Amino acid sequence: MVSLSTVWLWLDMLQRELVLFAAVWVAIGAFDEWGMDGLWAWLRITGRARTIYLSQARVASADWPAQTGHEHDARLRGVAAVLVPAWSEAEVVGAMLAHCLAVWPHGDLRVYLGCYRNDPATLAAAMQCAHDPRLRIVVHDRDGPTTKADCLNRLYAALLADEARTGLKVRSVIVHDAADMVHPNALDLLDRALDHADFVALPVQPEVQPHSRWIAGHYGEEFAELQTKGMVVRSWLGGGLPTAGVGCAIARHAIALLAARSQGGGPFAADSLTENYEFGLAIAEIGGKAQFLRARDASGALVATRKYFPAQIDCVLRQKTRWLHGVALQGWDRMGWGGSLPELWMRLRDRRGPMAALVLLTVYVLLALTPLLALARSSGRIPPFALTPAVRDLLMFDGVALAWRAALCGVFTAREYGLAEAGRALLRMPVRHAIAIVAARRAVFAYLATLQGGTVIWEHTAHCALPVRTAPARAARHRVGRERGAPESVVPA
Image (cartoon, rainbow, N blue to C red; front, side):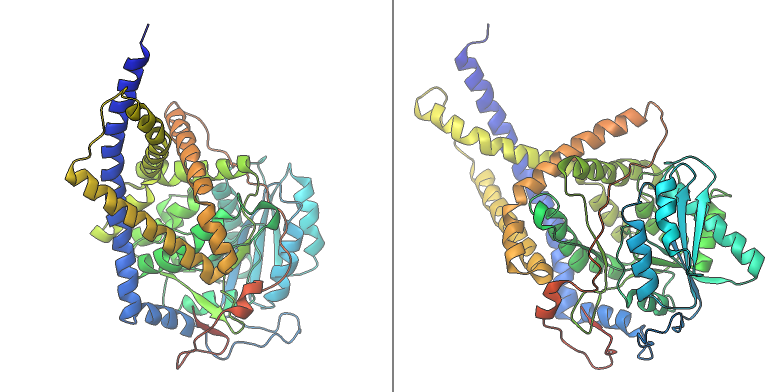
């Protein structure tokens, strides 16, 4: 039988090893993040970030049609086809379609909604908007759920059939989810942006849910920092631009190249858990130019796709597990490590999730062990723990780095959601970390299970309808700077 003193000694050795492991890997992560911070700061200081914003905002010309209320009176530079895959979305799809068709009155708009033959409730909800001739409801010839990419490929096939039958060629293909609430200016912005790029994406705006401040609320700070800093830097660096799979548009010729590359399988990767992530990287692989569009409308609201993210912990873990599995693990297998040095850096950042979760777990284990072992040392059960100067300096560096990360999280969250939500973001950090740790463990085991074979299916996330409004309440408080040459309808973010 193991004696208590032996257990204390084992715990002492464990603490020493974990301290060194955490100190080194937190520092490596800090340098990685400071690289992004430094590039973003340089872009802001030199004006290149504002040039990115302005050049993207200027593609929306000042002759945007006013919202006159006359149906289908607005014009685009060509036909825009919006692809919306839907499985078990009866509660939200009707409101989404009604809102989309109302705030986008363009005669050149075509909305392709994909339903399944064994999902009559979603089909019935969609039929409420069937009076609009711009809506095309496509019923999949297979039982659902398959995968979201498979449904998108079915919609793309319907688009090709319509082009062949009518002779009308689509200029752009836009991807949305069945629960998204689109911004009135988004379609015009995407349409103009395709004059200068093959693939363009808008931000996603997670909406605050008062009944789920501590679970659903953590999406807000994650997306605020990612889309204010990370996606802007990534867009400037060039290369692959992963997206959330909503609010993104691709030029017709580019999606045709992706479809041709798949040899008849369709442009979207039907066997991928995160087809949206792979889709953005695939654009770069065929030589396409991608841009991330960040602009604000005249009220100060971000031109973004609004949506509710999961509010229950089991749904959050399922979604985060799928993201980590698809991007960090399956993406490694499917997409490899090709590309330029900046692209390799971005892919490394995309795939660091499981390792980052392990480091976080180590830090929290140390937080629990340290006071316990301090009591044991005070009673003489184990020898004192004397840090070497190098490790002590490294831990001090890590403390500064973690404080800096928390401060930036608060700043970016406050910019989009206000000071109160920024305060909650800091208090939510342990919740966010716990979700990342559990999701990473589940993703690793799920990935190991797929190595034994299996079929990828649509891991559906339950959605609830958003209130129909076009701007967050905080937009009126946002101070918007206006630059010379920027159109009145869109200003730099």
